[in-house]
Amino acid sequence: MNSILVTGGAGFMGSAFVRYLLREYYSQRVVVLDKLTYAGNLENLASVAADPRYTFIHGDICDAPLVDRVMAEHHIEAVVNFAAETHVDRSLIEADAFIKTDVYGTYVLLEAARRHGVARFLQIGTDEVYGSLERGSAGEGDPLSPRSPYAASKAAGDMMALAYHVSHGLPVMVTRSCNNYGPYQYPEKLIPLFITNAIDDQGLPIYGDGQQVRDWLYVEDHCRAVDVVLQRGRPGEVYNIGAGNERPNLEVVVGILQGLEKPWSLVRHVADRPGHDRRYSLNWGKIASLGWRPSYPFESGLAETIRWYQENQGWWRRIKSGEYADYYRRNYGHRLTTS
Ligand code: NAD
Ligand code: TYD
Image 1 (cartoon, helix red, strand yellow):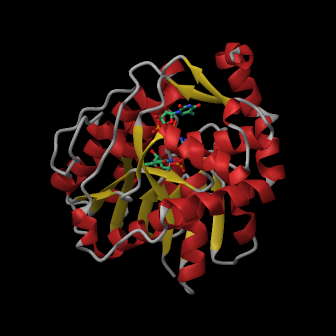
Image 2: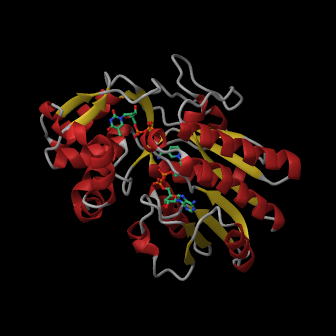
């Protein structure tokens, strides 16, 4: 039986996609290749660990001999590349791993996919590659204008993937999604950081004026979008995945505080992120024409997410008392005393 290789499958969105595949497709085999960086967590895959259709391989997508072996031994027919360094703030501190994984690692996967005649290669991209938009929405053909080392490394990965389609006929598709949120998101990103801080009555550090706009997609909707593109997307094409939930950050904060019945006094305005992108917005008519629509209104997705973090405190408390605590103290310790 052939298998789908999900790289980065122990992270937030990759693990949601693995759980989705095993739930939705009775005979699907899924191989996860994940380096288990600070963001990778086998607890995210605990619910499928005993499933005979699932295999976990601990390894780096930059390791070409390993990637080659995985593709051969598991008869990989499709690759979905979620593996990446993903946090803008970390890319501002140290971009090295972003270039290695998001650019070189993507190349290693493409090269192996070409050699092994993989039938579908889906590169998971981000709306951040279009840069900050004052008005309007980015279409798939618009010029890329990445403004952080994270966005630049993701843009390079996209370009390499599309080049493999043109140069080698590899059946590559690229998706570019807006901000995802939901269960199992590492608590350094806005929504899980603020929910978990608020549960503990800790300050919520808003960068700058908090009027930056993001479009918010519930992670289950993203899984269905990826599935639609895998099945019905055309090789060589890019598909934007938007949600229709554009919100200024302060409005998201209001939703979190109301959902948890916590006071506004937890909000702290801190120094802005350098080069902070003001607004992302996607035109996602192309994927809509494949029959996909998001199904979660932001308010119900946020309520589900808040409930999950309330009910799974062990999951995020282990993270926040470990790697995250060190990272935060090293880089943002001064904020702990800001009011
Ligand atoms: P995440 O940070 O939660 O998880 C990344 C996963 O990749 C982790 O399991 C990590 O261990 C693994 N990984 C990192 N480097 C690796 C390497 N060299 N080899 C193998 N595995 C490696 O990320 P996420 O939020 O789930 O994002 C997944 C993908 O979706 C990324 O490509 C990201 O750029 C893209 N994306 C994310 C968002 C968002 O809102 N989170 C939005 C659009 C696109
Ligand atoms: P983030 O979750 O890091 O996603 P991205 O930067 O990839 O969109 O941030 C979402 C928005 O929230 C972004 O405008 C930055 C802002 N933000 C804060 O104001 N404070 C925070 O502590 C974090 C992590 C983000």
